[in-house]
Length: 426
Image (cartoon, rainbow, N blue to C red):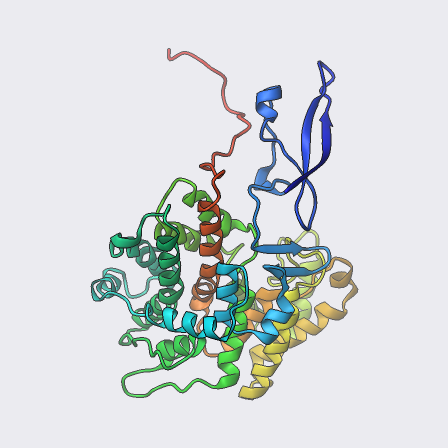
């Protein structure tokens, strides 16, 4: 960070207040208001933190107007094309892409942590059979803190790394077990001969009676989904992880908090909402009806999976996943599946209709992610769990970055009080 200049706040009732303007390496400059209250007695008011930088970070950069997403400076297009998820995990955690030796060692380390403690496996039986997998994951991930007391000193960099590795490795196992428990099938344990994505598919779809052999196209599609969802700057769940971590909470509790936040339909649940929308429309013949509703200002209905809060241009992740979507549908011969035909027709309209184009309501990553995952045979209730599995590496990288910053403080947002003024009890 470098100071670029000074912003002047003139309240008209005294000497103007000078506030430093700080520049990062990319993106908008920021006004440093840390001393604003001390100088003026004022706070800023920014619901949703739409114009507030809560921290500095070296991990992820987004330019929503230009459709740019960078992990540690690398464009997401290059990472999704040339790297696998383990390389991206290493990059987010360590700042650089691994060489061949580092990659092999990292793969081996992650695979050494994929198993769950057998006592933790028994936790699953405490949930109802019909519990949502995300509810199970919130509980089981939080419970990991009861099993690893030997590496819980968050001031120790080696302990932070150990916790991060455990979380990345165990999330697929926990997610797959949550699914198996939900459908009443036996748990399938990890197979360390497989890649990260292949292993997850193995744990999801194998049974004691029949082993699942991952199709390379399907495994690569899942790997790309994980890469595209690995981190996304200071979104709601990442901010939740950072806020929880700012109190000194253990990393497992922090990631559990992030999973709970991700569960919201406006965040990680958006791809699940997209599939539910397609099932509600039901048939290509009804698309016009729903398009008209979406355009009607007097109708509260809106199409899910179009437009993005951050990207005011095309979501770069959506462009990559659109390509993967068509690869998967072709590989599996699903182009004529009624739901997929409906989705592709809806995509065509959104890319050609002036209403959508003028408002930049392009299909986003959630639209394609839902279609791809359904094609892979993943049930809708697991979509957000897979999102959590992918985002865990971003969460632990952001959490570790914050804890290692000597200037970090416990989060404590302020408020604009609008309640009753002081009064006496009668």
